[in-house]
Image 1 (cartoon, rainbow, N blue to C red):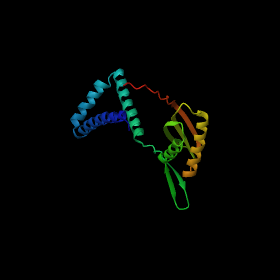
Image 2 (image 1 turned 120 degrees about the vertical axis):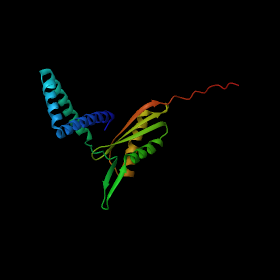
Image 3 (image 1 turned 60 degrees about the vertical axis):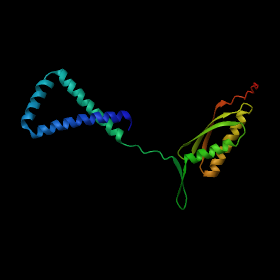
Image 4 (image 1 turned 30 degrees about the vertical axis):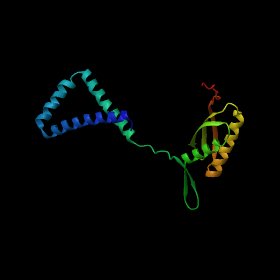
Length: 184
C-alpha cells in the first residue's frame, strides 16, 4: 500500500471512529438521539443544496471505502525465479543467477568496457537484455552477434532454460585515452 492510501486510510479511520462514537452515544442516550435527529433534519436536510452536499460526502466515503478495499487486496508477486520439474522434484533458478551467467559470458569478450544484464521471465522462456559500453576500435555488429549467440548458448547449457531473445543495447563508446604531456 503506497503512502497516499496510508494517509487516506488514516483520515478515513479517524472520520469513521468519530461517527461510530456519535452513533454509540445516540444508541445509549435517547435524548441525544432526538436532538441529533432534529438537528440533522432541520439543518442539514432542509434545503436541496444541503441534501446535495450530504449526498456528495456520502458518495465520497463510499468511493474511498471501495478504493481502500481494493488497495488492500494483495496481488500475487511474480516469482523471481524460473522452475524446472524433474523426476525427483523441482529446481528453482533465480533470475539473478541467469544474469550472472550472461554477465560472465559477455565479460570474456575483448572490447566490452561496462556491462549490465537483466533477465525477464516469459511463459516458457527468458529474455536477456545487455547494456554495454564498448571500446571504439571494435566492430559493434560482429561483437553484438557473437555475444548474443554465446550468451544464449551458455544460459541454455548451464541452466537448462530456453532463451527467447538476447537484446544488446550499446549505451556508449568508451573515449580513447588521451596522453597528456608530463610537466616537470
